[in-house]
Image 1 (cartoon, helix red, strand yellow):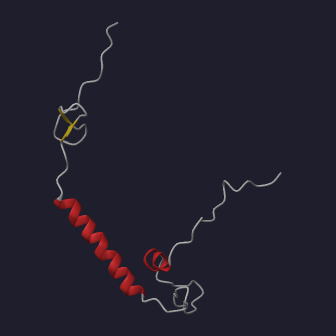
Image 2 (cartoon, rainbow, N blue to C red):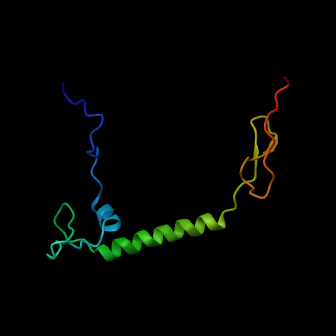
Image 3 (cartoon, rainbow, N blue to C red):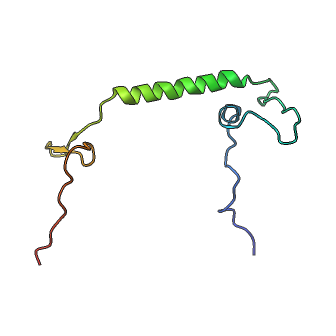
Length: 102
């Protein structure tokens, strides 16, 4: 019986070289050998420090944007009615559950 490929662990598209520079370790090897340099598909050496600094700046920018943007506590329905958003305000009391009329 053959394998249909649905459970394969191979990515459909390989990650770009900057993914490996930012998300992989520092290249330390357990056998003590010097790690090889990271290169792009043209063979140019990649400066991992620059890529990691850019990624850190993007994360900081995203974090600052999230801190500056207030969370919405109300919304508008299709009919134009303003309603509170459930779970938006942690200080509000939880809404009572539905009660059966039995």
